[in-house]
Length: 469
Picture (cartoon, rainbow, N blue to C red):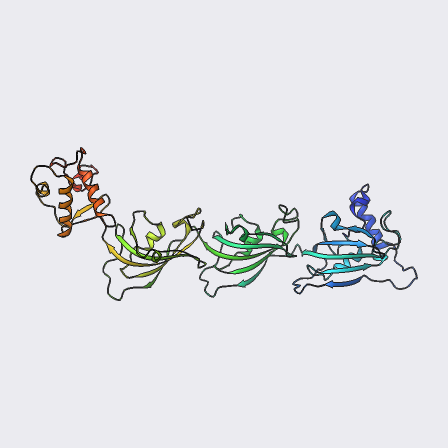
């Protein structure tokens, strides 16, 4: 309301073109003189509620959405958009409304409430509308404006909070995780990620979200808060979507960016401190290491810490015991060195996340290497530091009965380790490792090893037999 004529049900038998022509004639060509022949009155505007904030006022050619009640001077209602539960959605200032309504809406703010008193010559003139509005009727409209935009509008971005440190900004093909509150211009909430306790996760510039959000998230920093105002032609258009976003609605998103990454990102490594003494050996693939760590999200949310368990974490590098990004970031470290690692999700827990870790989350680690031991070659449980004894079986057969039971085997291996002649695989229970070695050599599984069964791993490799010693 209020088209240049009566509500739609009044002219059901007229075509749209006939209706528009008739209403334009009524609004503009009839009732030009006041009954007394004096000067014509203009629309009287009573602004009885003006919002504190009014970033934009209605101008000619704007598209508006509003509710109204229409009454006569005696208070009798002749029409109401509330009765139809439908907002009026129309362009102002181009002759689609009666002249009095066109004038009365100019300069109006969203959420403003006005009373418009429209004299007959700016309403339906000396003819009126049969059965609805009598001739020479002064009309009273109580109007509340809920939305305004123009087809020339672009996305508007207001930065609410930007962190002081912003080494990188979002660009096309980045994957962003953010929280948002979505409202209409009148403040009505249509959606919020906070209610689901889950960020909205999407690629930017790939067409996965409405064009206005694709544009509005460009250049945002991690931790930034911004307000993105999206006109309907860059949102859901004339049809809207669902039961919360009406057609031709301007949308406002208050966004908080949690993190973002690019699928091509590597692990970011920053050295925080190194030990004062020289470091001749650094961690490498196959090494057994002990390290402390703190793990958090980029927004500072704490996830895990080895300090909670009172002991360093243990891992063999390259053995797929930790996420790929952490494995990479722990290589090349000196004992005592501290690093900060930024691990993108494709090198962490991926789109699905893990227990306590959201899907597609970038992880921040602070790590300190506590100790390092050289690892063993792949497939080995024990290696000799020098050549093994020429009479290996005889030395292992402690009671010289031609058989080596588990007890003798264990005693012999432990003696080699204690004397510095060899070493077991680090990071594993020695008893279990020695037990596995015995099982590999006891080929007929009769509980003892004979000279025929005993073979070095290096000899087996040459024979392409993958057993252990």
